Length: 446
Image (cartoon, rainbow, N blue to C red; front, side, top):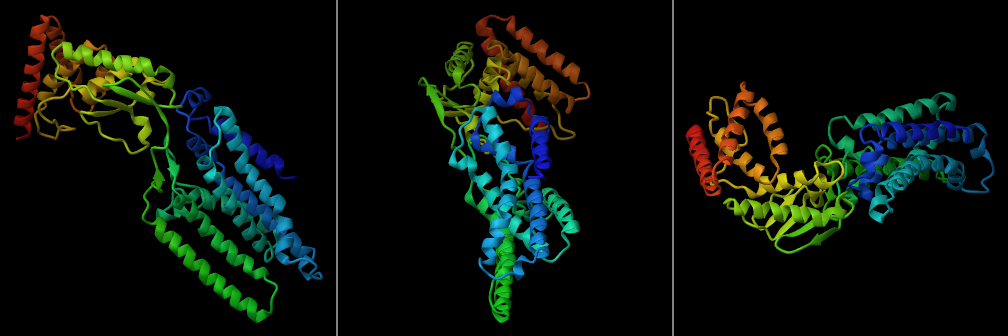
């Protein structure tokens, strides 16, 4: 209890200041809200503190057992029961360092915890027990006044620094998951079991030292436990060595969606921040497609338009039949609004008869960009999406052309001149501009 002001202060400071430094409260509650993701984010800053405080207090309690001569008393209870009783308050302290921020985050976002959302918390609580055992064992052999604070500091830096260490598998076995969750994702069991087994194996080997048996039996048990721990740790390291940076096994596609309409059928993520605007979003998509088709742009109406938020980190490419657009991201409170939805329709619906390179190589002509972008800007103007399109291209020009302002002015001039033509002439101009852009691109890349 006398350490409570320390770790409660840490929780409050990191939750209200550090946790909201990058994501202000207004942005957090505006969505998207996914319980596993929010739990993972709330635990990120507290793993190292929980393990460090647990280990330091466990060293102190283990040293107290030795100092008070408990192990030398008549064995009315087993050593394991005595250790468990002594470490219970320590473990509760470590658990609270993890539980309190999770509860605060769920209350803040008004999310209900799910079994999948609580799995990283349960894994962290299991690791707290392992660090308590290790700390208690260390307290048996070291002076607690010195080793308790040193152990806490050492464990804190051990956990926090392995998040930046090489080889990569160290990050995945530290007990502070190196992999963040995206919307609709869950951790695969292996992601959480590997670090738990890695530390628990060492803790189990240390606990064998308390075995009440003859000296010969204890020696054999300790040797066997050490070998078993080494094997388990090696297997965990080997398993995690195949994972990349922030790339522990996860599964995606668990978020639910609400759909409306047919051809296109528009589906938007529940709790993504824009689910209440589904009908408005579909109306903008239908209106944009209709406007483009009436203007002579050859567009294929998809059967389904899905919210790309539903795919997690693995973004799917759109096909003529199924589109994946950032509907929640754009239509949510933190997005561009309906103009962002129309902009997504523009980039997906307007196709050219050739494929363009993603970047201009040194020495290649970039004349085709003017014709390509003029055609796109004309189409964007039809559906009131020219704002985000010009903003995007302005940024791209800055990294490609030294005379980016002149190029942008030329693009706007050509698109503006086309808008002054009769409707049928505008359609002809658009297709001619597409063909010209393709010819110039083939000439430049030949």
